[in-house]
Length: 394
Image (cartoon, rainbow, N blue to C red; front, side, top):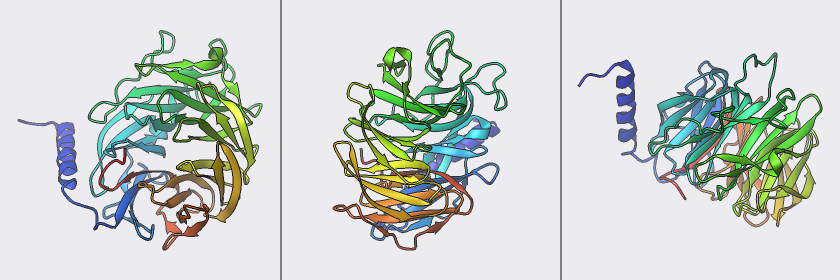
């Protein structure tokens, strides 16, 4: 049987992926792999690091970095089964799916375009059935960065092979996306989406956005239907939240949503029982919080981009208590716990072209540097995602 050039490339990638899974990664001390996108090259790159289970030290694997599948990669996510990596290439309006070998190497499998323009964020539900992606501009005639319009969220079904299907239809007016605007009639107020989060139970999706003209923030709360479709709560109106809600995360019990606000230097805790966000607590952060993550249900970590610091909080029924502030690299933009959740934490420092690593004290939340931290990135890193070595922990 003959294959065209595209078929040959796909066949080679598939064979390479199968071969890669036959080998283990650099001994038994590799606890997981972290995938870090960088956007200076064109196309962008994905740097792959293995994480040492004893020291928390990071080391790039051989042949890393890999092409990201497009220009300006800005966001990424891994599938719950640890077999696929998805990378948003903002300047090409696409999402590239990579297969992940057992040695951490990534192999391009498929690429899809998002409905709108300039995709900026994505997340995957814990069931591994849907991928949610944000576009800064929805697909409306005349929309451009110089003539902006509201953003959108698209829902991609994830097929059994990890590839993305056609975005789920909303309605005749918006067939492949949900517009992020104040009402169905208001298409002139520009709301720029910043982050997306799906609760671990998969029942509700939240999108943060802000009006750049008024510095008013909003939170779109959606119920997820059996087929993946979204229904906007609160009578189809988003909730007013802070000034510029910038990053979202939720706790394992699907009880609380945490929102970092870039302009108010705050992190808000919302109770989300029944889907509707209700403000439960507020805590001060450093200047311009940019990313946040939970270590289980015990500790919350927030990066402060202007301060080049990391704030640590204890969590008790959604309420936050400040524990410590640690110095990290310049302009942190992302933070993640280690893929096996054994007590390590890493930040992505964009202007510092580095990654900072910490070991987390399971009792007090105190941080100590991992071996050889900080870790040098070959270019300005933008995002991070990870998988445990040896497969999913789900």
